[in-house]
Image 1 (tube, rainbow, N blue to C red):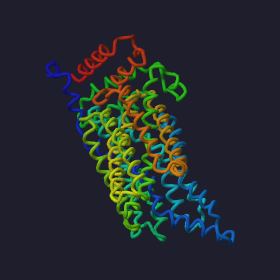
Image 2: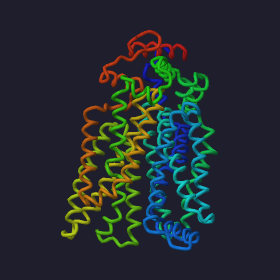
Image 3: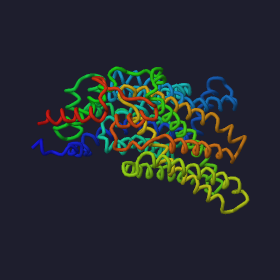
Length: 512
């Protein structure tokens, strides 16, 4: 039978969405990515009650109310410690995933979620606002690790024809986390003087679920074969993930990747920066991650409440409009999961940044004229929603997918470390600079975001290739032409195509 089998047939069988693959995806994304989104939004709604707690605690200690400038400083620290922790978490990605593996790092990362959840939950009883600030930094470390490790883990578990769809799942759970925090933060649920500590402590629940369930699912087969040299465990993991016994063709592709980079070993960040063969991949992930965060998405959310208020939305109803915007974000990210393999990564990035660019220009016009034109505030609301839609289908989820796909096994941890550091530093910069930008430029500050979206769009159009349904080596070969290098294979310098055919033939002989 084997000699009559079509070469492409095994790959089609392995492209199925199996129960093990689905559950591993959902558990890792819920246990890690959900927390990232939840902690982004969790302090927004209860902020008045938290600041009141800060002031009351200070009064009990010193017998006088806290100065307004000091309260502002403490609150700024409470908010900004999260992205700062995210930056430090990103710096830990490469050493941890190389030492503990992808799944092992996610399990270890739960320490940085459960501990701060307990700290924030008891902060009011302990009468300490310092605990909250420290806990926000620690849970930021958790977010910095999870935002990089989950896409890496899922990208290595998924077959190539499902890699894009599964790669967007972490971003989907981030948006679900944001929406959950917005819902729980409503005044009649937990966004009140008695419920805010419980709301902060809820972040530990997904971590506990992941800690209990994820050990039953396989480690990344690519990590086990290429980095640990354990082909037996890698084969068993692939068989569970694909739901078939014959996984030799996929193992052959991994062996080929192992051959092509055996001389390189594990690349550190410094060696990654000096690799000519990875130059344009590295520039691309830096541009995309900077574009993602500097495109104004956090500023849009920051400005949304004042836009809604100006449009005539009652103060008590703004929370419902905010939740509605979060629901749109979730819905469009779900849509991206289903269209990414049909439309491709590049088209979604171009469409997303293009929509955000136009929305920022129109929002600027609407904000300038909304005091003088009665119907203009509704245009402002529409622009916010359109911007959220554009960001949800491209700039938010796709950079994580593309970062996984652009690098081979030895370089991927260091690449995520660079991408994550750029992501979190850009996030921190926007949070720090935008209030001053908005004070100085007012409505015109969104023109800067529009320009950043346009520059990112042009770069993607000129440089970033389509990566859907390509193996990691095929993607590397596409960039090799732009980098003006040749991919070297460990055993001689066979052309990539010929070597691949030989290894696939060996896989089919083994199967026979």
